[in-house]
Length: 172
Ligand code: SKM
Image (cartoon, rainbow, N blue to C red; front, side):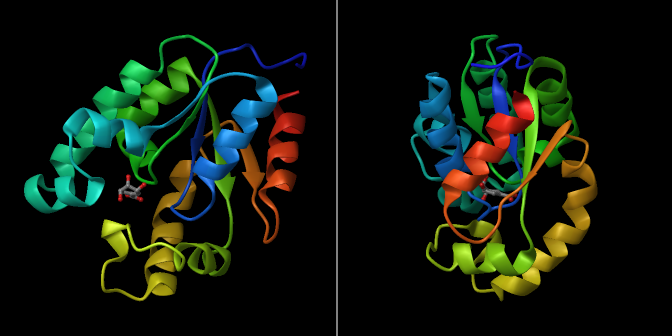
């Protein structure tokens, strides 16, 4: 497809609402490689939803399972993996991703993110809170860490296809 992507798994990181799953699926189609959503893989492995895991076992337990699932998904084969928003923030998970995959930070302003998450109510970290406020706080806290990914692509308002094209250009 291109000159510089070495075929290692592409791992999309960034905050909830930025479009990691949608963009990831389309990117995988364009590259003709499999797509995996890590949150979905965790739910399949656990036999419960992310929300249920948080509620019943707490966040540290979830993070540990998340790291193990991502370690299993990064198997050297070309594929696109969308991660949950907190995966890359965990030191061990981030080290694994940086060592064994091509990490891409998908970023957007808290305002754009808040607009997108409004359409779904499946985010434990947003439960009962003002999404814009939470997303501003999370951006401030997490953006410096997401920025450790070697490739940064911004996801603007509008069709995700533009973001997919920007990624293809960035890895090409
Ligand atoms: O992985 C889930 C979970 O709700 C945690 C999270 C986060 O910390 O940003 C994002 C979701 O994808």
